[in-house]
Image 1: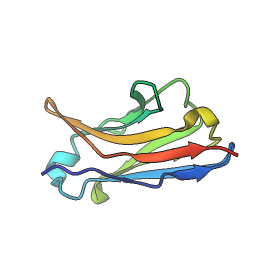
Image 2: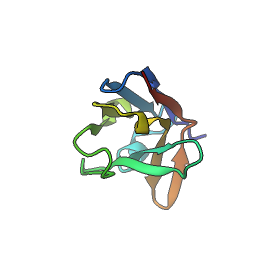
Image 3: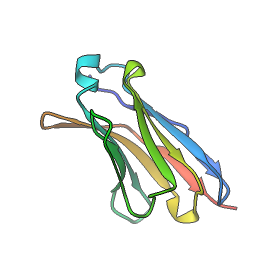
Image 4: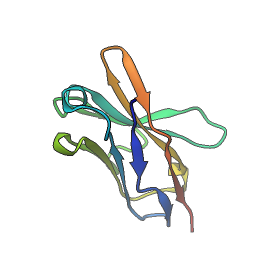
Length: 118
């Protein structure tokens, strides 16, 4: 059974940083490595939106609202992706979800909350 486990969320002041992690402990390496991995977020009352994604080859894409502040990366040996979030703003407050896509299938984690507030 597919499982994506997010961690690293929490409360941070504006201007601060957080690093989110997403592990795929039950995904075999031959499935994880060719997968496109992504972070999405959903704020209260809003639709879920793409934050950043990383392809199997390491290509990245970011939402305009986070460009220059967030960095997505992956460690295939650990079957883990990361989202380094710097210069956080109150509007970054949301639940952040990990996503894996491969061969027409898609999997989601349960999310980790991020709150940016003074």
